[in-house]
Image (cartoon, rainbow, N blue to C red; front, top):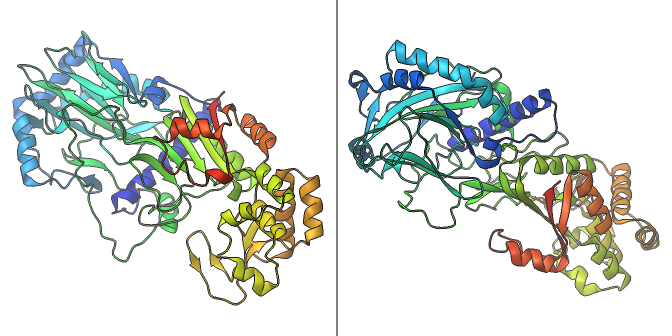
Length: 535
């Protein structure tokens, strides 16, 4: 561990990168391929706690260890919640908190964690270490703080082992959690229980007892190169670590968005959920948008986009070795709109492989791409109205300065493959230069040459041929579109990446998912839609 990241968003991004890397390594060392577990599918998994261990863990709740919850009770190098005084007062009114217990209780906890360590690894698909242990008693009939509906926030790779030394029953209290699909579960049993839960992203709440205290030990864990079950007390208000290796920090800092004023800030308190959640329950992250643009930000969505902005402070790096910063099998919807055509073949294959990894067994991949069959048909029909819909007018002046004619051939060619030169700047972030030599347009091919190519090559072959010509003739080009697929090629691509296609009916897909996916209807007149599942 080395330098400290101060901004909570950057800390989460760093942990997500770190967690995805370690998960990938663990799965590869375990034989590779798709990995599934109850935790990865549902978001939680329960372990039994034997009576002797449960009795020993009650030592955490000795009166000698009672403390008050305090916002300053956090170790250096940890995130914390900056709670107002009235919230702290209410939390202390409804709960009894405990500091570091005696050595006997710690030894019991460490032995139990060591006993289940490998089982936890198999559930979360990576090695782990303890970063904090907290203990408290919820007073009878409380519905505030930990007993109210909440997500813990922060990184997707911060998980918790919630240990209940008493059996979870209506009389003793219990735990209620919404799984990855939003289905509610109340966990109850006749013996002590330990619940591994994805509480950073799943809504949950403790159910207090009718007329007695409900004890709970919360063990916060994070990814690690080697599993470590040693006891750590970082404070009742310690929410996550901020220390990361220089390599991880370099990845985040290299691409981060820096506004005019960037100040260190703790995790802000979460919104207070009602005692009874509205239906359907929306967990914090259940959907991923691949290439949603720098301004896409909606509740329940993780946006992976390459352009930094205030709404996307740590952009995603699309590359042949990229990894989505989210755990395997945990995403209900993976959506992408007009993104894949901007990537080369190897990166497309990697992105679809990652989509297959993170989508849940009952989840969906929803793709929206340029309809290249329609592009070809409109070129054959010389449909100028169709080619006017693509927003090319803003870059046409750079064509004219270079002597490139604004006609249907070049507009169609641009849709299959277009690029800009270094004098132009960057179109995706709108950092565009007023340089007379700036160019953003199609490859240099004659109308006759393009006509031969579009009539004899498939969509994918055409895009590759144009991209190769650009690479041969231009110095440091940056591609806009560089890939394309007709329907048959798209089906073959998805099947080769482990997906089965359910539908290519754009109207039906939009009707089914319009309420769930923002921007789904945008550009529908020029797009092909695809709904797929993991095979």
